[in-house]
Amino acid sequence: METIRIKYLSDKIEKLRYIDGKSDWIDLRAAERIELKQGEFRLIPLGIAMELPKGFEAHIVPRSSTFKNFGIIQTNHCGIVDESYCGNTDQWFFPAYAMRDTVIEVNDRICQFRIFEHQPAISFEETENLGNENRGGIGSTGKQ
Ligand SMILES: O=c1ccn([C@H]2C[C@H](O)[C@@H](COP(=O)(O)OP(=O)(O)OP(=O)(O)O)O2)c(=O)[nH]1
Image 1 (cartoon, helix red, strand yellow):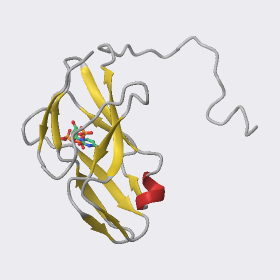
Image 2 (cartoon, helix red, strand yellow):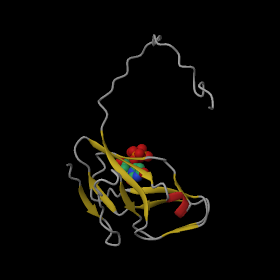
Image 3 (cartoon, protein in one colour):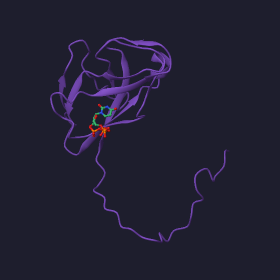
């Protein structure tokens, strides 16, 4: 069991809940009412700041129903929250692009996150010859 220290920056959203046995992913809520016109972009505040467990980062992605419910897409596709993003004003946000006119109400569940352990430290060793068989480039296995 890992513990995450969390600071709520809004009293208008429900507290985060980890639902054991259902999904690893934890839903996040809009902390403001946001009205967007088609084609508009906004960073939607999620009303929370956290101190992630040591050695972990968090990934934020839309819920499967987010586009259907709100007509927004997440512009970075997957948001990475660094372990160092842990101060009192380091509020998490959801970068949203509206594909249609839409309203997101306070407390609406618009995205989800889970934590991942950091990858090991990496160094790069330059070479002219990787010495492996070519796989054939992107799309080489065809459509079906
Ligand atoms: O969807 C996201 C993506 C990022 N973040 C926060 C956490 C992350 O640690 C910080 C910076 O993100 P990132 O490093 O991906 O953005 P950047 O554009 O490189 O900004 P910076 O110069 O602050 O690193 O923003 C979010 O709240 N939501």
